[in-house]
Image (tube, rainbow, N blue to C red; front, side, top):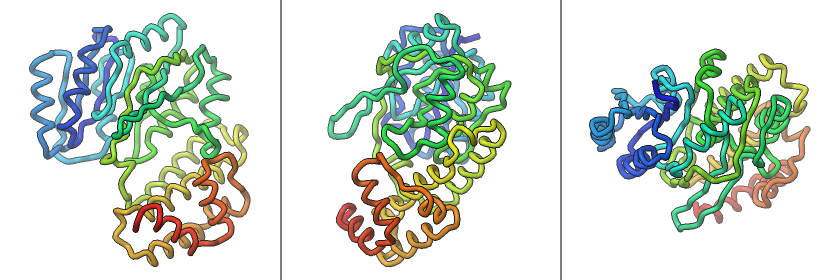
Length: 338
């Protein structure tokens, strides 16, 4: 049985997936299996995945007839995984050659049930910037609760935000199965997965070495207009509420609901004014006003004043609190050229 199962959801990724797979095959740690989930691709990705499996018996491919989304793809692979440890990799990203060996070594040496690393952000213009998960060291259950669970629950505004990137962690398969932790949804799914996982994890070993290459892909779901964003976000908040109740988290961040709703509101506003939205400018402004009037959003706006955000987000928050929706719309018209 392999020590580590690497899970890669694949959707319309024929331009990227070969480099992604090569980064796994080039690992200094060899006791792995790679699970490629073809999520109903209509490009050349399925044939490429089959070729990778034919070339290396450590690669397994699962073909889904219809696109079911990244959560369903990852859940399928979690069910099929044979490794004692689980790692995730996005099809348009890459591992550094020492990723698996370093993460596995951290867990073994510290007796930890999780490891984490820093990553490198890459942009299309060639810009790159490293980002820490946490400062290097060993974190016990109390440290995990303070540095990960609390921030994931309710620190979604103040910089730096603890991002829910699952691919910079190595997870215990035993813990995942014992706690029945899976994914749901096509957006913000990483955040809830991490939140629940770290309600169970007892020890985390962290390196500040950037071992993952994250490419900011303009074509990815996080950069597109999402017509269903508010429905998706409402379901996200329902699930977050259930986790807060299940693990008695309210005391960690008493205003986590307002904080999370403000964060969601700022994303919703940016989404509404995205260039891919076919509504007229007047319709976009009306929709933003309606979103702000929703009871949960109105409560957040009334009871919490965001601080510590980036200057642009701080300006948006001030305009929303002052109900200056016309000015807000004009600002986005200039920014996004809509």
